[in-house]
Image (cartoon, rainbow, N blue to C red; front, side, top):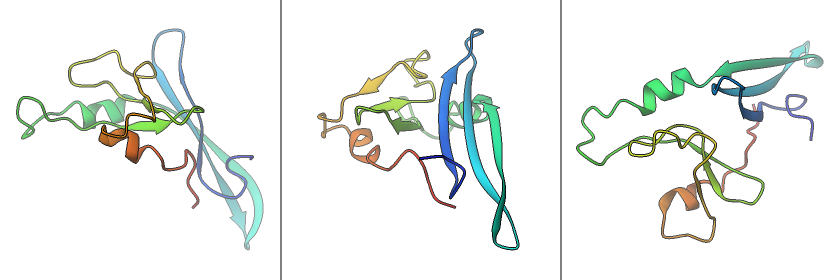
Length: 114
C-alpha cells in the first residue's frame, strides 16, 4: 500500500543517528476531489514525549504511553516509559501476552484513513 495516496498513514518511525526518533506520515491533497499531491510530514517525537512524560495526577505508577503494532503484531512503544526511559522503538510486548492491555489495544492497524 502506498500510504498517503488514499488516506493518512504512518509510513515509518525511525531512530536517527543522533538518537532522535522521527515519525514520517503522509496524507493525500485533493483539488476538486481529484488527487493532486501527497503531503509528507517528518517530525520528531518531542511533542509526544512531552505529553506522555507528564505524570501529574498519575500517582507513583501511572503513565500515558503510545505503541504501534510492529510487523509481527507485537506492541512496539514509540515513547519512553516511566520506568524504562529508553523504550522508544526498543521495548516490545509480544502479541501473545493478552493479559497486558497494550497487547489488546495494539491490534489497530498501523495506518489510518482520513
